Image (cartoon, rainbow, N blue to C red; front, side):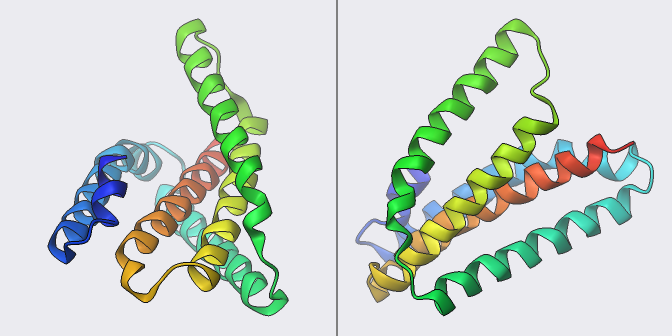
Amino acid sequence: MLSNKMAFAPSRQQQYLGLGLYILLEAVIFLPLIYIAAFYAENGGAMLLQAAVTTLGMFAGLTAAVFFTKTDFSFLRTAIVVGGFVALAAIVAGAIFGFDLGLWFSIGMVVLASASILYQTSQIKDHYGTEQYVGAALQLFASVMLLFWYILRILMSRK
């Protein structure tokens, strides 16, 4: 939240500092999963490449849908917020009670991340000003990385 607030600050230097802080935090979060995928999973390098290509393909398709359909995806905001809180509650419950969220949760998170990409891209196209590009990049980056995380989890669950 701090990085997001900084990315929309009036000072360009503070915006880039917020974006850099967010990217650093994402790297710290992703390194263990990428390490596990690369070194412990069978064909880990191929799996990482497949997850990256799938993520980029989905991102390209979702972005194309926003630009070609000319639909305002603002209506997705409520579903994304509610879905985010439900997902957070499920993650906390899983951590407290020790159960695995499983494949269906990961699929649901891919749907949530896809909706978030549609929403963020629509906001960037129709509602953000040209001076808000750093904050917009942070929000879109967060959605794409969420998508990558859960696609990689799905691929890692196939053994």
